[in-house]
Length: 207
Ligand SMILES: [Zn+2]
Image (cartoon, rainbow, N blue to C red; front, side):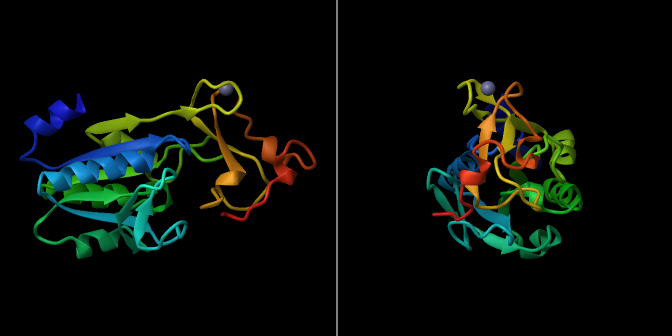
């Protein structure tokens, strides 16, 4: 479906969104799409929020160690400034951490003829819609919703289960603090209950 869309609409810009819970392969899919665009000799730029310092500052990196050079930015408005005339594909990772102006920026880029690919968490650890992602899903031409594997039952997982207490919405890089779960086994209150579960045996340090 999306490949057909890309083949038949390649003269126009559009927005693609890759969403899912943690460990659902969003960044891997983003990297794959950018690599394919590069093989097709298209000029690509990849951005990520400056907050995400895991693995590498100037690269987008997936949990399976795939990497891509990327530009860390504070605000989505910087994307328009940094885009060059020949940039035809704009990739954005960890879209949930950007502000509410990201949909407007993506719309402007698509209207100006660019393919915009945004990867990000669709829900936070409480299961609530996360940042600008729901808005982007609504205005995108293509939405890829990915699933991970539920760590409890092995079924398709759509939720990010938080295992440790903390003030942050999503602790970047603290993959030990989260696991993927299905709707049945997702428990948003788990990390709010002190002295229960395996949360207190986990370390927040990232290897
Ligand atoms: Zn499950």
